[in-house]
Length: 145
Image (cartoon, rainbow, N blue to C red; front, side, top):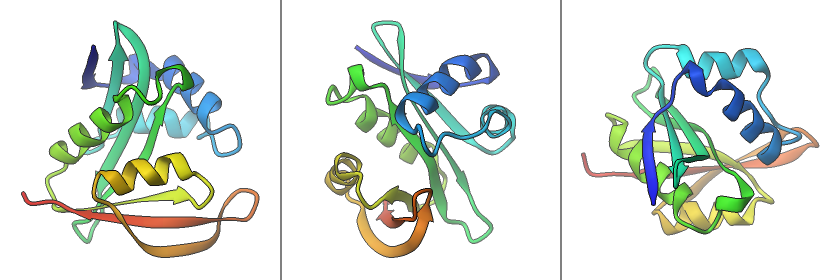
């Protein structure tokens, strides 16, 4: 069973392990992880499967009233079991705006497929956005609120 709950600073060690496991090259530094778990107005949700930490998503609303999903990750052993989709749906529901965007590595076909199935479309390409000079794809989903 997948349980989605709000994350907080007590999740720091698990979030750091998740980032290092899923985004070795792009893992956020410790101070960024502390920030995402403690700054106001950030949506931060964790997924647990059978009581074990499985994944995390964070999002915020920018000054233009666009929601940005800043990170979504699921431990490899919990992938393709619905945790990422559950996190994405819960985050979208928590965002108070209908225009939601995210960026993803152009090579991350699994994530691109997840987002496409959820209704996201590619609207832009950011050249050499990620480490290793890989392009980022900007994807957008408009949701009825």
